[in-house]
Image 1 (cartoon, rainbow, N blue to C red):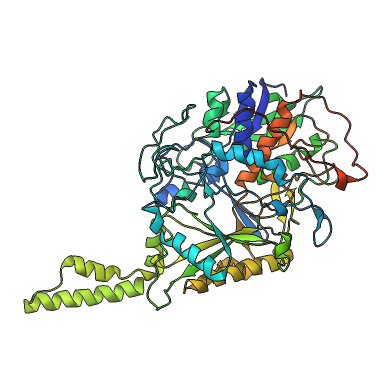
Image 2 (cartoon, rainbow, N blue to C red):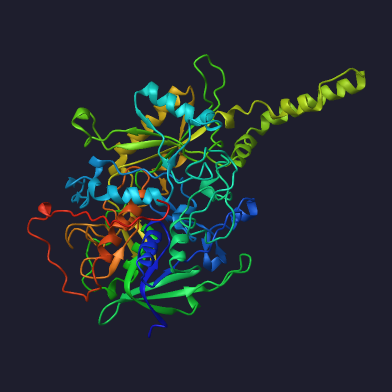
Length: 598
């Protein structure tokens, strides 16, 4: 099929890797087209009502074009995003760097093979710096009222101190102040950077509403649409929403072609046969695959026959970045009184407890097992009402008691309590919701999962068994946190059937030192296919450990340094693996230009 148009660079997807690449190439004067399957989400457009949430899923054939896309596999389910800005629309804002010693080299994996990171922390540090500036990352302003009394943050700090574990306020891509030189305050209008905002809608600072994971309707979250993508559009990038990529292939003579369909604005839940949508084709000199871990791997596996010589490592090194959910309920102070945690107050995550890894500094040589983080995991306020609604027997009993008291007062003509006092008695102390807090664990689980395509569907061969020791350790620390807070620990019910949910899937097209080990090299370029890059979580050869967003973005930024310093090349023969891959040096390049927001 002949191409309908041509661009210098096509970026598939607009998540952390795609947005960085779109800006970097556009800023360098390249013609950039971004193809994003989802729609735009300006502040105020995110779903909030039950009816809106029911339609907030991605199922085009069912007439649903929402931002939540759920992939179900054996042993693990994954929740990812669809929309301009990708996962940044629903992530919890945390921008933690991968721990220096967690960039392991040749670490054996049970069942065969090795986890190897062909880049180092030193390679990524300048790119971490650059991404943090652009995303305007700042720790939770715990030293300033009203943030200093956030109960869940206070509780996590207290638990970490009791357990003698490292506690920190991680950098968050959230605006707590109108500008960098002003004090934090909720609900104030944010001063936009020089490149403006592609939505053209005013944003206000964080109101501490706990709605980060269902989309920030205030615009306080510095998501990719407000930062990198706005900057990319300002530099001339063509951002196309509702453009879903179906196929990719190399072109004779160099470059690549991308086949896609356009989803028109659908009727309300109106089913349609998306297989019959007309395909269009755009060709390009450089192709950046950034459709997310699952999307990119699925596209490459689905179109594998078009890529002769593509690495056999495609589909390997899949994991959920150690994601695990637990709950603290009915927390108590040492004297037995109610301890408020108020998970709905604040951004979703404010602080993190770090548990060391066996590869950490010599001073911690007694540590065994893989390291991880445990973070407070907040939620929207309406979840408090849902939690309390599960206590209806108690509400019914109190309602009957109030009705009886009111009847007695009326017939005896004696003064009774005010209606306000009675309403307070009806609602009760709400200790369940007020004293409960989800805990989110993540860390270096074992990247031994395999992704495949069967009957045009992505499947995963992954079970918790290999990493069971890791997950047991995470759960043990969560129990310790619950005990330190005087609460009861409740694991995710899915743990009973050895099922997990991840919001951080990684791997599938991992980087490696040669074509037998990985799909892409340390610079993000696919072995044997010049000008084809993978810029998302699929390229990770193992779990990041902490939240992976910052590392994905930093790797994409580093990839762009190399790509922009070289002219497009025609495809050579597939490279042979070096004889001594462990001795291959890594290289770091940092350009002197400044990113927006610096």
